[in-house]
Length: 123
Image 1 (tube, rainbow, N blue to C red):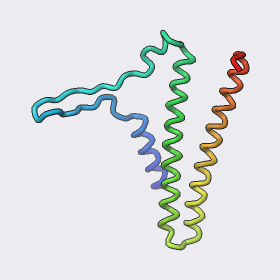
Image 2 (cartoon, helix red, strand yellow):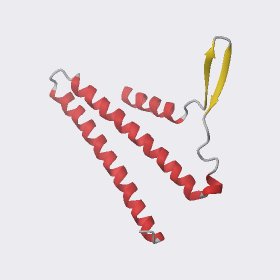
Image 3 (tube, rainbow, N blue to C red):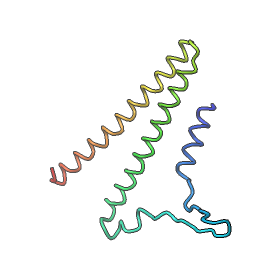
């Protein structure tokens, strides 16, 4: 149960992070630093494909972060097993399935990219 809560908390923090950051340059001066919107010029430059591509790139970044988190969690479980074979196997399986999941996600991305380029005739 704690694992699900930890993953949900980290996912929520990644998805609903801060939009603006307040940086203090001197004790009495406060400046606002704002992040630019990556979709702002997408409609003029490429329309819907540009927006979908940006969303997919962001999703792949989140997937990579989750895989890193799961590999670290599996390694932590493995290292703190204290010789318990069940915990060692659990940590190993967590790391193995995280990497397999990453391979499946990127393979599907490359397969879809290949098919869409073949349909468009740009291969």
